[in-house]
Length: 196
Image 1 (cartoon, helix red, strand yellow):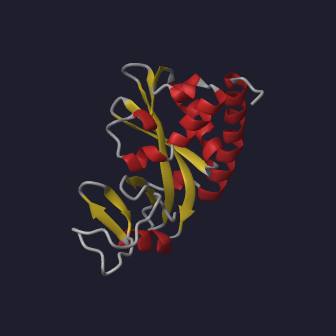
Image 2 (spheres, rainbow, N blue to C red):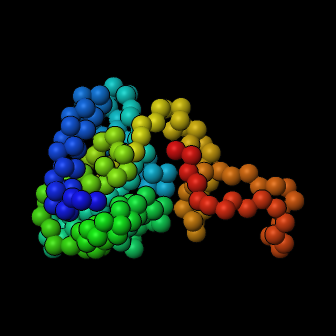
Image 3 (cartoon, rainbow, N blue to C red):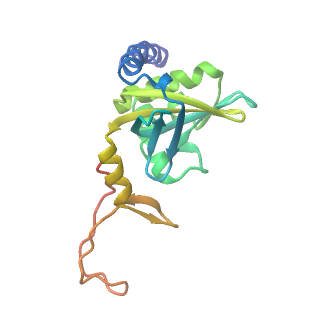
């Protein structure tokens, strides 16, 4: 890549402004009184008092600490589940390919604007449809929305999810009836997959 990190970052910040304008126009999030998210399913939900709901698959980009004035990438946050960190690792990989140390250093000195800068970069790399931030105590969390889900898709995803105390929640998978816990004799998925 011929761009410096600051040139790439600035271009991403410009692009996310247009992306957010369109996202706000289509979804009008200010008219939803409540939001929540399901970490296990990776779904962010907005609800209005009149019963309207919006669902998005999301990726947690990272967090800005007002206490320490630092930015922490979610791929470097050991307190998050692997499923939450996985998608943002693409951003780290992009940073490694282009020698952008701000994308490959897990914790960096920052200000509040850094969160939007890093989120704009993640949005570009992950082809996000929008971004959002929220604050809990002294941390501001930044997420990108990967795609919107219909109520039916959300219900289906939730209904077919399997919860495991060791591995979290994931999609249901079929298992051949001849498999048993003592002898491996059947189907094995060779890679992690996520249909949404």
